[in-house]
Image (cartoon, rainbow, N blue to C red; front, side):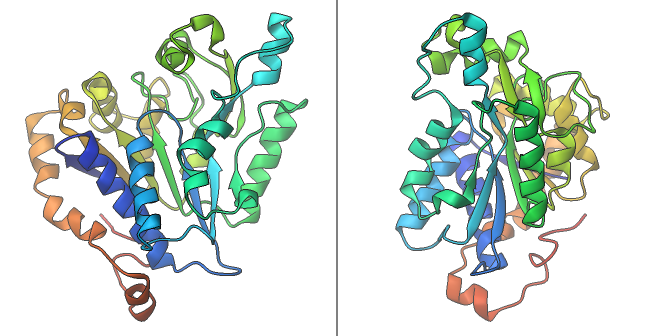
Amino acid sequence: MKLIILDDYDKASEWAAKYIRNRILHFNPGPGRFFTLGLPTGGTPLGCYKKLIEYFKKGELSFKYVKTFNMDEYCVFHELVKAEISHLDMNTKDYHSFMWNNFFKHIDIRAENAHILDGNAVDLQAECDAFEEKIKAVGGIELFVGGIGPDGHIAFNEPGSSLASRTRVKTLALDTILANARFFDGDLSKVPTMALTVGVATVMDAKEVMILITGAHKAFALYKAIEEGVNHMWTVSAFQQHPQTLFVCDEDATLELRVKTVKYFKGMMQVHNKLVEPLSPMQEKQRITVEMSEKPYSD
């Protein structure tokens, strides 16, 4: 496990984007060899997405041979049935729209390579099972990027979720509904109460996991994630047991950590920053690196 501590949100977002860029370049994707990337939604990854778009527009990175799998999606159709109404204003609120408006339409990813759970599916569990099969069919996820809620949930794996869980239907906790109300004009009645989500074990199966944690309101969750034991009430803590986990945070998110913990990981930044040094596609094709081939770093 590695903890990357940056000064603020913008620097944390940039570091994460550079790391994703380098992982894709090192993988050297092409026809028949796709890089598989797990992606989150929400406010935290937006800065990272903006930087990735910037790298694409500069010609530093292509997503032509990248396949993505998003963590979750709201169950929109079932909200309509529950409310017994014919329309719910979700045109710009669902995660399909979020990803296309904030990321996918600005890069060269092919639509068929961007996989997002269908919250409108008639058989939701069948949709979840099919999503797991799609991940298996591409050989698993190379790098799964995630964010967390203030209660330490990753994707929609709310407190109390099984750490062995797979993609499934999940009822959202009140804290999550309150936190997401900002995306629905602050109107709690508009926030869906059900969602489809990858499971904790689904993310744990990825070859590498990078979790973005920013802001003082997530400081206690970061503390629970790395300084206390694995606990299903704080599902992000499961990633202590993943062999390749990166926690990327800003200073505000470290407020609940021990001073010794912060000093230790800050002392490693000179080494960690080598992971995001710029590499051109041509350089990447010409060199074989040890630290970022199969294992980008090791403990």
